[in-house]
Length: 188
Image (cartoon, rainbow, N blue to C red):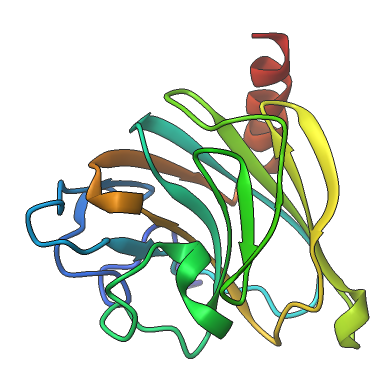
């Protein structure tokens, strides 16, 4: 008898303990402004090679970062900043459209993230670092090679920038659902 397929979602083991798991693929990041820290959730699925596509829908969030972390990332090692400020461990787009890689702001995209936004990552993970990149789609608008030189393994992740609460849906396994959601977001 074959084992049932593993459901991809937000990791309970590798996310901040404050993260609430509403469903396997929906997480809630609490208001952490009083603690003066950010809260981050990481996916159970990591990507190492090949071409991959996943999406994160912002169900409710006013100030967040959506992106990637590498395999040595830990929720308790960088509690002060959102994904974009995690030094060598994070690559992210923030609510204001700013993009961050390895602790540096890269550019500000002409779009912002808010409730209902769908962020789609198109990963191309070749054998050599210059060939390891992420193209983003924000509500159907394409931004090519926003992140390059990605490490050996990357995981989808979200954080509540400035400690604001938020709910996030991870879309990984059903590529048709990601494509349909992306098409729907582009029409809105």
